[in-house]
Image (cartoon, rainbow, N blue to C red; front, side):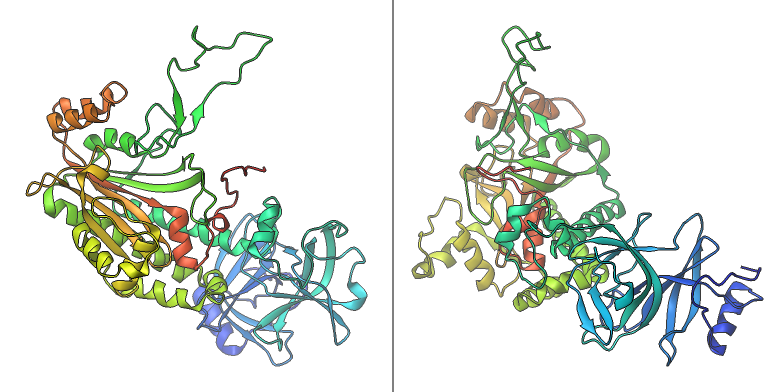
Length: 534
């Protein structure tokens, strides 16, 4: 930056204050001049600051602070840092609204700005002079554009991009296009076009989902957990519910495949996994803290708004968790993960989250309350007592010793003050074979279900039965001794430590965070009964 910088489009005149700070921080002897190549609001909606990028001799300069001059054509800035090896002289936009006449210009809503070499901050409006509007420019077409940044008088907009050059890259054929400009499509309608809905406001969900996955990985990394890639193909049904997909090799008549003589590729039945928990348990004795973030599959013949055949699970397993103290540590771990992830998203994706909150205003209150308050705790017996005392509210009556229905789960969260609630100390007979019995009452287990307002069960877990003989008895009871002999070995050989873990339904967490009513609208390509279109 010591050499004189070439002016590409619009000279950037620095105010005296800005120039002095620039020279002081970057030890420059010359004024910085360049071309505006990216703009966007600060992620914090309460901060009216604007981030700007300019290109200077094939370098990208990001700014922390920006001032717009009265003539709305000059930009004052402070240089923050320089990213080398980038060709950033143009922006790529996706046109997300129809053209609109305004003072001789064609106003085009730009939506999120993207570039062929990585993302840039958001630009909400692109203004195209009427004489420069390409004939092929249309709804949801893509284009290259260069121009200048200026303030915007449009309601709800602080800045806009005035294009001095615009080139259509991908013309959109609107004749049979399912989405129309200025027409609000329902989620049910948009869901019919899974291959196209990334072009709609569904993109907000995709950005939140991506950041949520990153937040979860960051949390576990900061807590010294090791990520384990658990298998998709497995020989066991972890939950014991029998709702699994059987995997078979497609037989070829032309040539003999590598299958065995009995026709099975693996010599025994293989399924798509419903959980990676058992495989995480094989690693916990050596690594102490492990987790996965993987797809899971369940052949549940349901068309409800809360079920998918393919979904994503966050599962964790932690060693040295035993008894009441260990169980308390486990519930704290689940609560910590959820609160950390939620806060991370509010700090970084607030604008996308508010897009959904505006459609359901109660959601913001529920989410912020879940951050500020401790999660509730209810023993199963107390939950049943509360439900029976309010039985007139339910279509299906609660039964002691049986699982809770969704209406029961939602009532409990509301009864506890509209906060997430742990239901604990479950009857042994209705929980999985690997749950550890309580010392004071062998008929109960150290198990948990985490219930969220408006959603129901989001996470489940508990302590694992670490006693060899107790687990052997449970496996015999469920007729699983042969298929899970390797799992029993984990207790047989020396070095086994007591552990506990949980599984969090990723899509159900997103339902709560965003206030979305259908689980099929929080995953890019939902699969459910009779539906797997692409």
